[in-house]
Image (cartoon, rainbow, N blue to C red; front, side, top):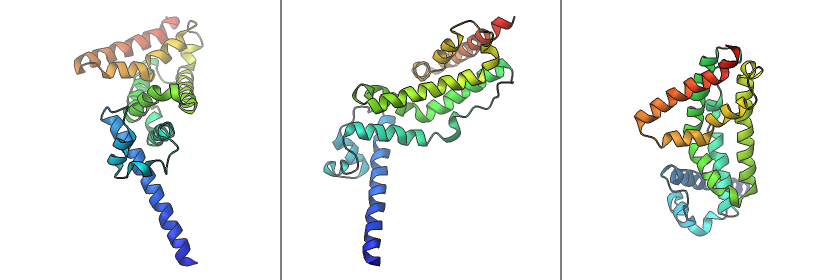
Length: 198
């Protein structure tokens, strides 16, 4: 009985390790810019056979979904902001932008991959929607004092300017342009959120 339990436990551990290796392999390919990796490429990077890949996942869409979730578990406190609603507006803006940089720096590859795969998977589409809702709610909570007197649509604009899509666009710029754009973005957001009170 003990031998049987040990064998089952060993198989379970191998399954968990192999599944993690596949997820790490796919995320590694994403980080290298390969968002359309084939099963053979993923399996080779994971050190497994192509046939064994789908012992752990139903299909490539299931694998992509699992890899997105896997990356999001690595985020940890990177999505937490070092600011409170009672802090000064300019300080909160800088904290939000720094928080988005940390968050997207970790989860950016998964966010990009999810957007490429969302047309094939309602689960991935739902995950993107949930993440967008969370990001919007974070902005709404942090800037609640400013938004209480702001013009209609201000929340929409702040949400857009601090979104993953905007961050990804900035990442494609050269370093000097990115720095100046980030400074302009901070100034624009601060002005947008404080102009009602002037």
